[in-house]
Amino acid sequence: MKPKAVVLLSGGLDSVTTLALAQEQGFECHALSLDYGQRHDAELAAAKRIATGAGVEHKVVPIGLDVIGGSALTDAAIAVPDHAGTGIPVTYVPARNTVFLSLALGWAEVLGAWDIFIGVNAVDYSGYPDCRPEYIAAFERLAQLATKGGAEGGRFRIHTPLIELSKAEIIRTGLRLGVNYTDTVSCYSADADGRACGVCDACRLRAAGFRDADVADPTRYR
Image (cartoon, rainbow, N blue to C red):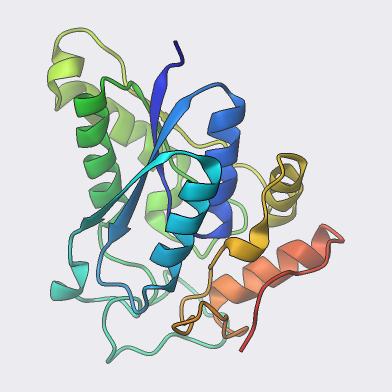
């Protein structure tokens, strides 16, 4: 019997590669997407397509971080930048990965799974503090303290297979595993059809990754 794993699936390039890696490692994957009040639904539609194509169970949980606001991804009054900046950008969503991992941890307990996969990256990323290795290590310690499974001697593992890879390396890995990146949506300002703006930070990192990997960019731009 395959071990079970919860895989956080946003519908973007990194998360679909993470799902493919988890399947390659022999896990029975259960994909979790979060409807957190993001600016568009295109990435959730992409996540559904990806999960269906991969043949995995897929849940979408509404959490409404737009009620809190504080990010260009959840507050229409804050513009998504069209240029690179310094420091932590306005596209950082307060506590997002902590909330996401907490929900993944809860579902893992229900499923009897000890493994959680998340596609965070600390090389080609936007400077988000909740993508760093020390954050992941801290959350893994929290998982042992805050759960019935941990209290009874079990050990949860937070897998971050992309954390030390460049975007080009991630793309090459996904292509080796047969990932179709045409189905993914990475753009912070994608339209209703999932077409990318081409200028936001996520678009720039994605385009540079395909360029550095010497692979044709399949992204649909508007």
